[in-house]
Image 1: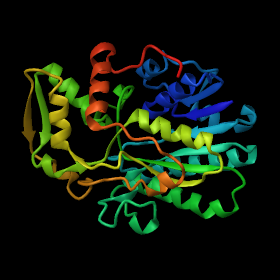
Image 2 (image 1 turned 90 degrees about the vertical axis):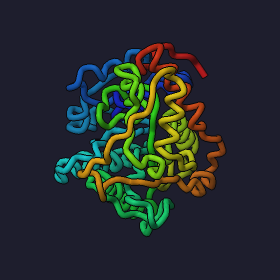
Image 3 (image 1 turned 45 degrees about the vertical axis):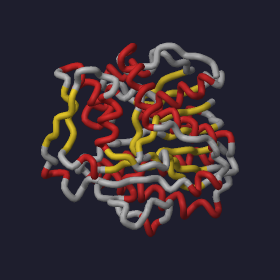
Amino acid sequence: MYIVTGGAGFIGSNLVRGLNRRGIDDVLVVDDLERGEKHLNLNGLRFADFVDYRDFLGALERFGKPRAVLHQGACSDTTERNGRFMMQVNYECSKNLAEWSAACGAQFIYASSAATYGDGKAGFREEPACEWPLNVYGFSKRVFDSWVRRRLPSAKTQIAGVRYFNVYGPQENHKERMASVVFKFHQQALADGKLRIFEGSDKLVRDFVFVDDCVEVNLHFLDHPEQSGVFNCGSGRAESFQKLCETTLAHYPGARIEYIPFPADLKGKYQDYTCADLSRLRRAGYTREFTTLERGVASYVEILMHSGGYHRALEQA
């Protein structure tokens, strides 16, 4: 059995789809459906069972010995200020799952975040010297990564962190304000034809990574249980929000760009540059090329246009 926490979420549901494409449907999806529309992410997927994350965490012994735990569940709201809540969900729960997975002899592959790097002035290498998070979300991810690093020398089973940069792609509809700007651009283009970006967006530069690439990186570590550690997952290319907007705009004839002031409450808490250093990932044997911005946006816009941003058909790899 494979367990995917956050399996009804953005990356989690895409990861379940990636397993399905390999012919794997012995999957336990762990999440919550308090926001019922998240079920749309599961409509096109095959899985053996679904359990609310609170019921799962409260009785882990009920779930036998999985082959692998793919831990995508987290509070990913970078504007959340409740540190106690953030640490309980992203740190304490992750520790408990990692320890349980090790006791079961299961692989443990989990979601980390480029938010651990903060402003990135020290670089984007998977090293403590580069990490200075700007918000408590990034802090919660950094603290768990540090906990993992301390245990790696004595670990008997795989524990691998996949440090996501700016992910975009299908199945993120439920994320609302935390959805990618491509999703927001699509909504704006349909509403009034105005794609809104901050003033100075030509200088706001990020590493945008297509969700399919994130799935492939996770599956790489699933295939290589001998590989442990924390690994960046980005395209390795830094591109501006201005370019992203123009790339998206090309798919909406008649739409135009509208510039808006940069929000005061984000000043000093906003990463204006990210770019994944992929050296460690490449040393771990991952050789696939990452999707270009042009191809990723085109693929995503097509799905937004034809199925509202959800995967419907499930094909075998």
